[in-house]
Amino acid sequence: MKHFKFTNIYLGDQYELSKIPKNWYKIHVGSKFFPNSKELKIYIDGNEMFVNWEDSSDENDFKTNDLIKILDFIYMYKNQNLFIHCEYAQSRSPAVLMAYLAKRTKILPDNFFDALEEFVKMYPKFVYPSGITKFLKTNWTLIK
Image (cartoon, rainbow, N blue to C red):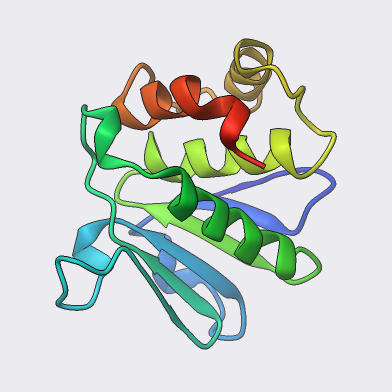
């Protein structure tokens, strides 16, 4: 599990989830963590957000409005401990965090390539290119 300086945000994988206290806010990114619905992409239950995103190589499997909802959730609870995870913490959850740090804080630059370069220094496990990073690159200016 990686803690990001100047935030209450922690990034990890599915195996670290069991170590996270119940009162923390959590974002579960992946269809395996999602309730039984194919149409629904985001579901909130109390202090937990479930995001129905496969680890896809196709950037069209991700939607800007969904990412903005996720960033809004993080921003709303920015003063609380928050754990973001996907299966292996290599593409989807790190991409969400990179977007948040660039678009909602001043921790990363607002330019996609500069943000990516800085984020990889902070989190070397980040796997790119992937569908989610292609999506971010294509839609970067639309993400607020």
